Image (cartoon, rainbow, N blue to C red; front, side, top):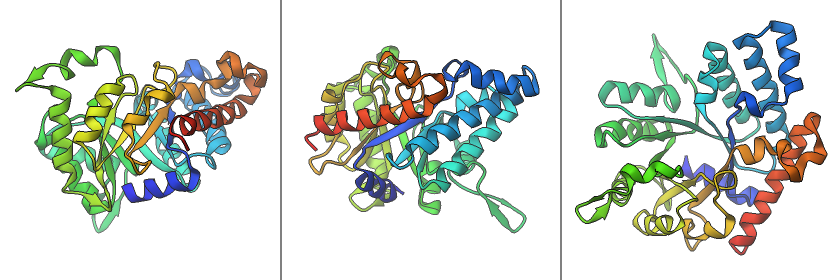
Length: 307
């Protein structure tokens, strides 16, 4: 699967993933009000507004980018109607030729971990029929439970041509409370990085592995160290833009071949219509503002990388 993602990145010349994290606060008031007028103040109305919002943004940017990253929590918050929209969004993105990275941060052990893997990137057999529940191409994985929690995902990657991104050094301010603690003379994130490198050898796809890593743009020096530790791991880089990461800090996340990383922006793209530089588009043209923000992000990152 990582080979398919790399091909899309090369075709679009955009090492960018758009996070589809549709918190209701980021949806235009008029759009939400329209659906509330039809179905009342219900989960169904909110989910319909999210779907219309997502579809408009996908239609506006799909030709510019290789991938999207829907954050499942934003959909779970709307109950079963929200989960239905999550699935609908995944399927529509596939129709548009996009790679889908499910941001679910799952991780457990044994049959539970296997069930998570099958739910998001694998298949479930019902009688004689195999069905893909959510059918993302990649899913994010929490490695806190160790190899027992990660290897069921790798098994599904190999069986179904899928991929994972393992949390290594996350972009949030308190990540260091655990991730920076020194163990055996090394910070914990480096030890996790070494495990990712080892796990990755079990699922190689060309020069890179289907086992990638999540490393925040807000920690470029740590990203540089982890890039060396995990030469075959693709790095999913959150934290650009809204969380403070800048394009000039991204170079260490990439390899000398110009590949090796894909940078996420969520609020900076889907809520661009609320930002001062895009207010000229107005609330009604929120999707056009998102397209303009993607183009600006692409130019910013490629300039920083010398493309």
